[in-house]
Image (tube, rainbow, N blue to C red; front, side):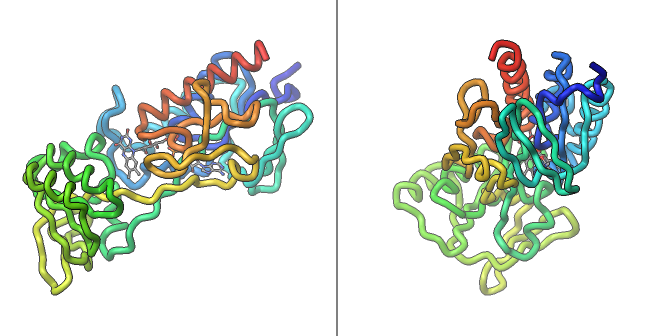
Length: 302
Ligand SMILES: Cc1cc2nc3c(=O)[nH]c(=O)nc-3n(C[C@H](O)[C@H](O)[C@H](O)COP(=O)(O)OP(=O)(O)OC[C@H]3O[C@@H](n4cnc5c(N)ncnc54)[C@H](O)[C@@H]3O)c2cc1C
């Protein structure tokens, strides 16, 4: 049977770090793979991705472009720039409808469509996301070593985040009108983290650079990086449509999977940020490899 007439073994929804890693392993296992991707990885706002072995400091879109080009050198892979809008089980596997109107069918389905972040609506914040407004000190912290750092309070976990961020430089927790538990206030004081209770009105800076945080009463405090915890949700409704188990993880919604990254529906797998916490490119790639090899074994052994 030629590759054109051969049925697709696996549809991968999402061609980010997890999806491309899984597709690479499946391609090397001589399986026919279709990757659907809308081209909006979660870290697209950052100029540089850090911590991924051998790729430190590269633009994340360049890392993905190289991965996609290498994947496309396999004869058994197709990548479509298209959105999966719905999915349903069929007698032999799954059918996925695309925004372009096509329907594609495959034996197995891998969901790797990533998360969507919602940020606080503070002027000057969203446009600096991934540059001087940060979510993760391991990804972007050392670039702001020993500069004035801030943590914006969003949940009780923000106090814990401020205790950690102090490792990278002098830190202030901006409560933005919230109140602290007495126990947290004691821990922050013992660690030398300052606490500012006032509401934050805007962030002040030049282009990507952050210079100050403005508090109510037009008071300015010097700051060069602000850590925020976004509200993260699944970026596609497919998991809900398929009736998959979804948990409240420590960093937002998480599709429930077993150690092989199989979801609660036989034949549907999930990998990357949507199925784990914490999140990073390295972990997403590792997850993709786990899912890819698990799907292959499932295709072979049932
Ligand atoms: C601002 C920021 C900076 C970061 N910096 C770093 C860093 O420096 N180092 C690091 O290790 N980690 C970093 N991360 C974390 C990293 O971005 C994620 O852990 C990683 O992108 C997760 O990979 P993923 O494959 O699960 O999802 P993603 O990389 O988000 O990929 C998901 C893909 O699925 C596509 N998609 C979504 N819905 C559909 C659909 N219905 N149909 C088809 N395609 C769809 C999207 O367009 C996207 O291309 C950062 C995160 C943020 C928010």
